[in-house]
Image (cartoon, rainbow, N blue to C red; front, side, top):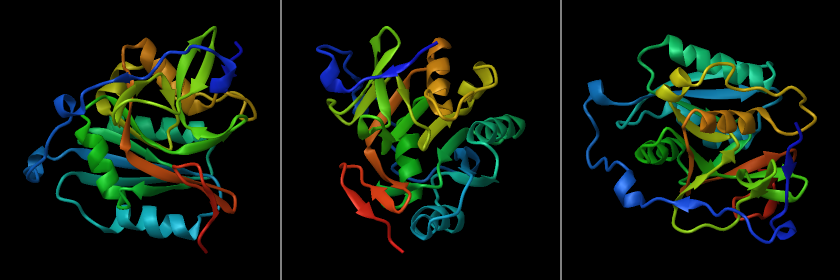
Length: 248
């Protein structure tokens, strides 16, 4: 099966992201919930290479060391496994622990921008109260550094989303660099959840995950009030598309 990623300029019409009224959908946590009612988020980090110092400082350390009153955290780090294998292992571990309500993927090259605190980033995604929700970050594709969110344009072709209305909208597929998944998704969608047969070709394992979830009735949403930078080698791609040198 061939999958094609198109530049927006290559087609005249495409499906537009569907907006949801955020005020009607998000949960408003005015006070921290009681400990027994807090969501339990398993923060899963697939990792295959060396760590970037800026990522350790701005993403990993706050998640590991700074508590939050709004949810409980479990940190799960995989080092050395292929990314699809690691993600499947994480998902299986989540289902084996009945305490866990959500799985949150944050890749070892993702740095929060808005908000700068990764704990607040998770809190904002939890507040969306949907089965699958991603923040915004850019990924290197053949069309450049487009956002890692796409809409299907027909004939197994997908266009990167660059324009939308509101701050909370539906997409067809997304990357898993900053992705919150509710437990019931993993319970109802059969494994393997993540498959990447040829790592030199598209689609990747995260693309296939959201596509598979859609077949089982789970929509994917994007909350643009969560934005991240994406490290690519010695460069860092900001959410607004600018490319800068990584901090040492």
